[in-house]
Length: 517
Ligand code: FES
Image 1 (cartoon, protein in one colour):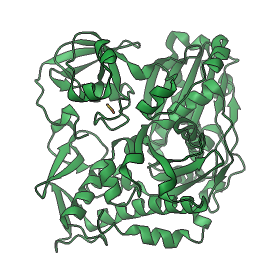
Image 2 (image 1 turned 45 degrees about the horizontal axis):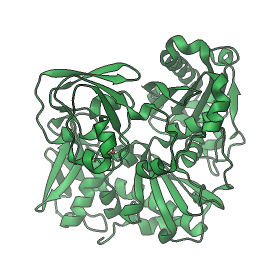
Image 3 (image 1 turned 180 degrees about the vertical axis):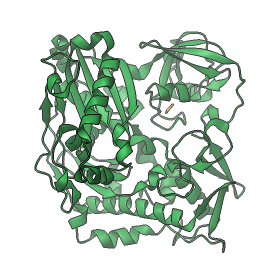
């Protein structure tokens, strides 16, 4: 977030209050401080990672003042500026503010808006009209680590409320395989997630709960099976093929949720063993398969999921990337919280680290790791084989934060798996990178990773201009599935990379870092 003002200024200790409409939620920031952390805590996304390039974080000043920044002037039209719209990622609060959050209005996009926001997520006005009688609906992205949900006015598509929570199953391990193992060892992971979501839904709906008559969940295949109480044993071994990939329906009574008895609660269908309805929703949100041009969606997580396609067909796969993108298995790895090195830039051959919260560095998160290794490749401190050139086998990022040889290897495994999967899917389509119109990066890591660093380490082998951060495509797609139903998609082929004879060879080839870029 190199141009995130939070990274460069020194806000005072005095605090100012920010109210966010239309939900009327409030938070405080230091006078002169950035709005980013407070907005993130309320579920607002920063699709380009807060670098002021995408226009996806717009807020309108209803009370108070936010000066027009350079990025505001570059992205917003004079009319929008005059109406009070600003880029939240660039703003600093000098006084109490009341802001309207642009993201909380459903993106009923005209064609000209789609280009500007890089979100070709078109909601049909006609279908929304059909839903006018349906009152309120809830879309839920059930992630392995976090849960995000939105209450939606089904008639207008406007977001009326946002709730986020941690997945309580995390007590049984951070990745899907450990969750499966816990179930096979006799643990019940279904009851806690249903209970947690039941509470979240009631919190989200508040007094409107009696009017909620449609809930749709999207998540990876393991989350789908665990929530639905399905047998996860087939997902524990090759070929990871479950017979229960379809949409599952429930009543509020079955789940013990305090919603109307006739409320429709559905978990959207999965595509394959490790390609769940979060990717189906992502395909819908990112517009994969909507045009003649090839578009790719890549969700960079412990399971890296990739979908590539056009109007004639979509191929998708999941790769066991491992935990490196979330800084798991990295000696000084940590989540993206205060004290984590989030970004590393190179200036005059020296590393400059940005630490979350302007605190002393105490660890490194995924985006910082990718930056640090990219910088090491540029300076020669890390060789293209992955070897740390220094005889100590330690690479200092921002003392006391250092990377050791096994940290670099972990990242090589993760990026090798994604790059190999990407190459194989393109091969399957008989296409080269040149045929791709866009690559949309989904998920939190995709939102914050510096694209140039990802290219330097060979994680993304494509021109910078076609790579975009796409935010939470699972939640946006779930909302579209909820309001519009599943659109007519071309055939989706799930490719099992484990069974592909070319995968190991491609994986080995992708383990090294590019010698130069
Ligand atoms: S412009 Fe603010 S997040 Fe992209």
